Image (cartoon, rainbow, N blue to C red; front, side, top):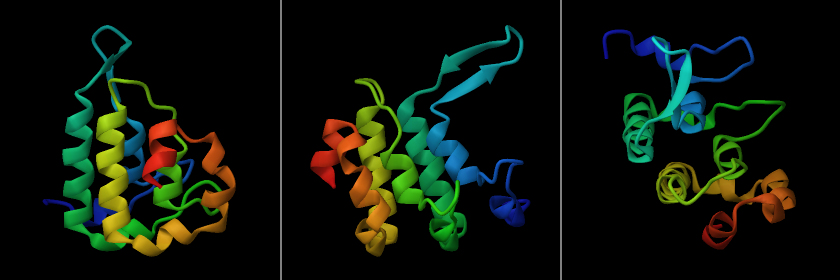
Length: 120
């Protein structure tokens, strides 16, 4: 909360902190130069925090027009992360239910994890 405007800063490739949090169920262990897993549920807390800080972040677009909901749906999930992913998808849907009507999201539906398809 010290720098509320930071939530709207983008990376060089156009990602916002909320996008990176959703994609980042991993973090760099700088001491070893390795990637290690965070608890996927920690990511849920971070996404909820960012939505609470600035609800307009739900409307941020990445990679040529992809919505936040579409972006998180298209990730590859595995057993350890699917539960957290579904909670995040629900958070995003609850914040912006109209995003489910995105034509591009419907086109890519078959490429999503089976449990994501079922949720959608």
